[in-house]
Image (tube, rainbow, N blue to C red; front, side, top):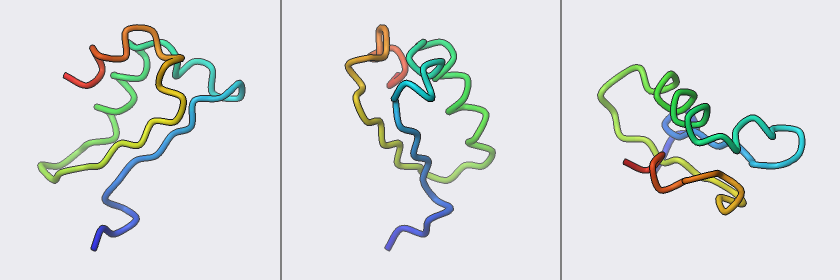
Length: 57
């Protein structure tokens, strides 16, 4: 079972338009991972993220 604190979720919508920038999104995700645990990252509407493949690396 995955505890709620063990994953990050951020919706890509008009309220969070800054997350459509792949550099910003990548920095945001890395800033939230502060330990060596595995995380599940759920991205809604990932097609709106410019060069989203780079974020997955």
